[in-house]
Image (cartoon, rainbow, N blue to C red; front, side, top):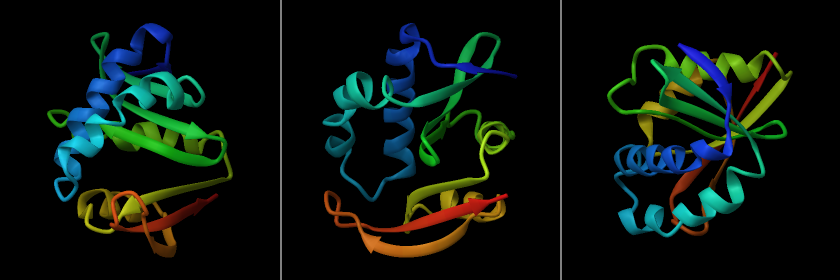
Length: 142
């Protein structure tokens, strides 16, 4: 597996990976919520963040997006989950920082368990405005 920085040519593929994975991981949120955020992901969020891709045989199988010390997104293709891709991406950004914060929906048990296994601790809980879902603010410190 190779990890490299996002290039502008990758944005469409990354947005589709984010969209397809989000629908499955967040089945408690309506699909149209994710659909209406696709354009902002492509034109605003990805170009203005540090995003690193996991590639296998030159195919994008996952990505991690950081905005300073905030993990804005980490997604792995559903067919590749459970094979260490997410952990590799997370370790890649951990090596460059002393603290990382993130938000995760309470109902996203799989991701919540993953972050806890990677030494993230719940710092607070609140209701996310747009979805009305409970989410946790989590933090990892070296």
